Structure formats: C-alpha cells, structure tokens
Length: 174
Image 1 (tube, rainbow, N blue to C red):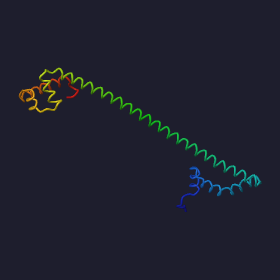
Image 2 (image 1 turned 120 degrees about the vertical axis):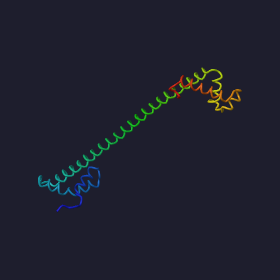
Image 3 (image 1 turned 60 degrees about the horizontal axis):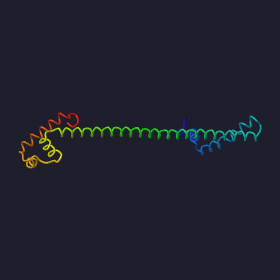
C-alpha cells in the first residue's frame, strides 16, 4: 500500500537544489555512513573510504551551490535586462509624447494665426462686432449700444463673420 505522506527523499533533494543547508546536512547524515561502508567493501580501507565519501559529499554541495549561484546570477541578469528594457520603453514613449505635443502646439499656433488673419480680413464694422461678441464676450444689446446700431444689425454682422470664417478656415475650428 502506498503512503499518503510526501516522499522525504524527494523533499530533501528539492531542498538541496534550492540551496537549503539543512537539507544537505540531513542528506549527509543519512548517507555518509552507508556510503563509507559501500566504499570500504570496495577498497578495504577505512580512512580512504571516509576521505572519498567526504570529498564526494563536498563536491555535491559545491556543485549544487555553483548551480544555485549560476541560477541566481541569471535571475539578476534578467532583472537588470528588464529594467533596461523598461527604461528604454519609457524613454521611447516620452520622446513620442513630446513630439506629438510639439506637433499639436505648432498646429494650434498655426490655427490661431489663420483665425487671427481671417478675422482681420473681415469688413471693419463686421470685425468690430465680432471681436466685441466673441473676444470680449459682450451681449448683443451691449454691442448695439456701444456701436450705436440695432441688435438685429449686430446679429447680421456676427452671422456674416461666422459664415466667412467657417468658409475661410474650415477644418480647423468648425
């Protein structure tokens, strides 16, 4: 019948691979005498058997430790590489954002210049009404009173100005 308990040797080997010193000590204590006896039967020399087993166990620890060190070095390399890639990615996106922002700012500046030029092309009275309405945010009644014209005339001038601007700078603001 198979036991439900985890295989202790498997756990010890996993611990050894993970660099766990306690697992190594348990393996050493568990197998040292048995291995000495085995080598003694082959060589008929107690001192030689003990030296040989100690050296083999030491190599086991060193090789495992070397394996673990290489594994850790590889992980550190991956982390460093990821940081470099993340930094490059961040710099790339920052540069793209700056280029886009500069392009947008230049475009907005060009649009405002075109709007200002188009406003200056309006007939004098129409331009004056438009600036009072749109730039100074005055109401139609206020504009009519300031310029001494009717509110209906103010509305006509604003309608003409908007129509002219829409035709002149279509695609920018309208």
